[in-house]
Image 1: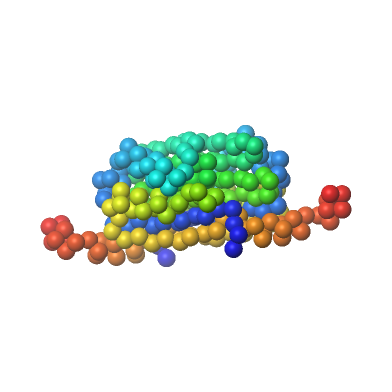
Image 2: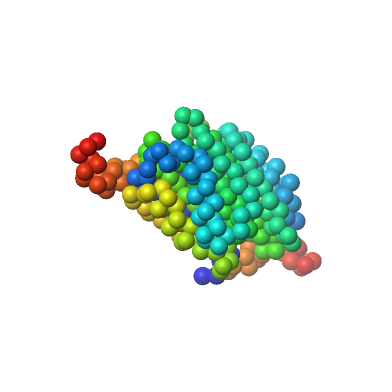
Length: 133
Length: 133
């Protein structure tokens, strides 16, 4: 299936709870995951919540990485969305899995922007517009 | 199924190509989608790519909204990740669908952080650690 992007939706359970609450640690390892995966970092933003929890996103030239942590549950939700053939979302995933000391992981992989769907969408444009185009 | 978060993975096809390339427009409507959905905006970052395309993320107190646009294909990938009962990801989704004048949309909904999985993860901790705890 030809698609523009590839997304790993990852659930990290049984992680180190203290690390999940350390915004500097999470940020550093998200950036390192991006670099190791071969991505080009464009911009990033991270936030520590009171009393606990970290959220953040790294916009890369090839889409984004995002994380939300629930230290009280030892759980982190991680999304690794990449496009192009030069970036390995799997490498970023493996880096974060080790960094967060995840006990149990589940993943789902999604093809984003299916090329075949684009012509379907074009077909749904009003006939007049197609005639003009 | 009890879960911490709810994610709408949305594919917007056949969108207005000029709007998809307008970073100010995309940013404004992502922020408006967050506000309309009842979310509390924490931080955000958006970027316009050369020659075309916009990427951005809005970190909300209840997780995040993210977008990547491919104006040349009339396509946008949108993720709306929320937690708690007070935020409606659907409202944000509907706002963006209208704002981007999407011709065809497909969505997938994912439960993130399944509460039942947390005990499974705990069980996978080393026995010694459980004995000490």
